Image 1 (cartoon, rainbow, N blue to C red):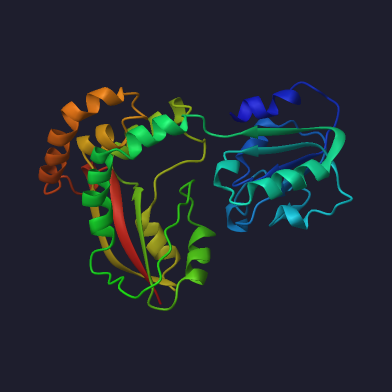
Image 2 (image 1 turned 90 degrees about the vertical axis):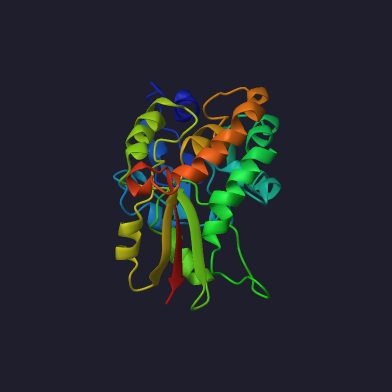
Amino acid sequence: MHRRVAQDVMGDPAPRSTLEIGAGSLNQLQYEPETGTYDIVEPFVGLLKDSPFLVRVRHVYADIREVPSAQVYDRISSIATFEHVLGLPEVMARAGLLLKPTGTLRIAVPSEGQNAYEEHYDDKYSTQLRERFYLEPALRGVDLKGRRALEAMCGSGQSTGFLLEIRRLLKPGGVFAFVEPHTGSLPDLARRVWYRLDRSFLPNERAVDVERLVRDFAGDFELLHVEHHGGPGYLLVLNSLIFRIPHRFKRFYAPPLIWLDSVLDRVLGKRLSCFVVAQLRRK
């Protein structure tokens, strides 16, 4: 994905100006030649501060509307971002105005196919597993009656910036509940290898270190609850698309594996489970 977006400038010594929309932690820059100016649009500046590629960025904009109209580019790129943008027509129109007459817009988005994604992740077996092992533990002890709740997704697993934004959104005493793959487990060792070999994952995807989150944000959040889940059912039922298992086989193995996960929950613990469910309360 990243190489294909940069293909038009690879091996070309001519400097070209670039604007990247949704630059994240700047991992695209490892595929871009060090010629021409490079500006980015990225609202979560916390993702940038530890990146070794930040020195190559000329301007950082929080919104594409902040880019001056007089500033035009040879190329505008975006990798795994447009599928998350709500006002996509406006962003596309603005990008067109910021391109030179011969400029190009280079976009990469996940292409599993919406039908395949929904077929695997939204069927009754995946829904049953999520309700049992995701929602019940994540909301345990949280009274949502008469409360306002926000369900959000954070894609890269990086905490800096996201937790500060969550703190801003939460009232004092509000609860942030999340379900993520966690560090310090044997499945995480296998996951790291899988992430490097499988093109379904971005280079900066990784598991969450809950202990580090609690330590780094001790002044903002307190840990209320943490538990670990995830066995064969989590891997082969919820992630059947990632494992390339034909959906037609799922009805045969899903029920016994979901039952097996409920049994293994009692013995797996942090070291052998696949994901963590945690609740943090804003101070």
